[in-house]
Amino acid sequence: MTNPLPAWSALQTHYEQIRNEQMRDWFAPANDPAPTRAERYTYAGGGIAADFSKNRINDTTLKLLVQLAREAGVEQRRDAMFAGEVVNPTEGRAALHTALRATEPNAPFHAQVLAEKAKMAKFADAVRSGAWTGYTGKRIRHVVNIGIGGSDLGPKMVVHALKHLETPELDSHFVSNVDGADLWRVIEDIDPEETLAIIVSKTFTTLETMTNARSMRDWFVKAGCPEDALAKHFVGVSANPAEVVKFGIAKENVFEMWDWVGGRYSLWSAVGLSIMIAIGPQQFDELLAGAHDMDEHFRTAPLEKNLPVLLGMIGIWYRNFFGSQSYLVAPYSEALHYLPSYLQQLEMESNGKQARLDGKFVDYATSAITWGEPGTNGQHAFFQMLHQGTTIVPIDFIAVLTPEHPLADHHPKLLANCFAQSEAMMLGRTEEEAKKIAGPDKPELVPHIMFPGNRPTTTLLVDALTARSLGALIALYEHKVLVQASVWNINPFDQWGVELGKILGKVVEADLTAASGDVKAHDSSTSALIARARAALKR
Ligand code: F6P
Image (cartoon, rainbow, N blue to C red; front, side, top):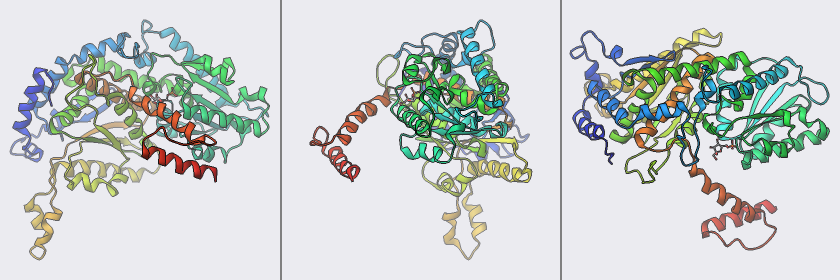
């Protein structure tokens, strides 16, 4: 697989030179007597420290990766994005999520952004204080965010992560799946008189969200809420306000986002209304401030010390030179439970592309598969394969140094596991070491207790899980995606790949729900599935 940039071929040669080198040798006192490796490969930005030292990199690797970033025009793409240029050419749009957290008065759309944020804050304060009531005068106790993809994953992830900052007066719920079980499991346990639904959809046409929104409206009406009082229970967030009003939401209850904000980059906008209600306008500002810290770091730090650049380029190193298929995100933080699923959309919907910006197809790999699970749970499930399996999966460990809960004695155990895993991945266990452990009586055990080691990990350290540090962490990954997209010469801001399934889904649904008639217009497999389901649905 090739890329015409000179640094790309230099990296291919370099890969051949170091592919068999062992990280444990690089760390060994004989080669690193001071030792300095950890220090040399640890960088900080936006309040986050990143230890890249347990990666299969040396000074030459980093030099060439940074050279590749330069040759690929990472800096130009970054600056064009911040300046509001049309960096999403297939949809003719800018991608200005950074403007949502900018503090500079001359930032693009600044007045508009501030005005919408003020409207959100007024509403959030009213709900939080109990001034906003339901149709019977009861205060709101349940906020149900109805949205999917970017209109769900970001807010859900942040509200869960910052639960320790959530007002005790309210519970937040997130409903995304068109499977009625998702909505039902939430509404069967809550009181409509105390419930506020936030319908979030950039387009306000998404099948799942509109289906859930309609069912939610029926639920309110069946419970006795008069039609003309629904405004007390429904607000909408969209870039298509006319459609929101058509749905029946009062004009004054519509919060706007804009077409220059991509869905998966939108939690900083009114899409984050559920976040603001949960943690309050001040903490929401802290979240934005953290993201802005990372924006500034990304914009101004030299590429050699720039966290999003290094994280992105090291990802490229494994994806395009080692041929890694996937990478794992393992937050050693239960609060960050939903970070991996949020990152799945961010990374794979952004960079899972085959067409370059010039319309030609790539002949190199693009987005790796992103997956993950909080530690330590993953250790007792799939880490076996990471240690001794035949596939190398690079890992991002994320550790939060101080706990956000009072059970302080758990924390050393949690952190110890995180750091021990990265050590074990790097060191492995040699045959000699395995023989010593197996002892003379059990030589047959040796191959089973050997670990190849040399498995790459990055450890991201956050001092404490605050709204600010979380904002910086999310922005780090947003910018990492742009860095990789620049090298792959693809557009990270469109998502044409989700369209085909949506179009065919409508046809299949019509066939499934048709009262009668043959199901013929599909391949034999799809037709047979429809026929079986149709029979079951009639039962
Ligand atoms: O189908 C994919 C997608 O368009 C995502 O990009 C988006 O985040 C999600 O659907 C939801 O879209 P909307 O906010 O318009 O309902």
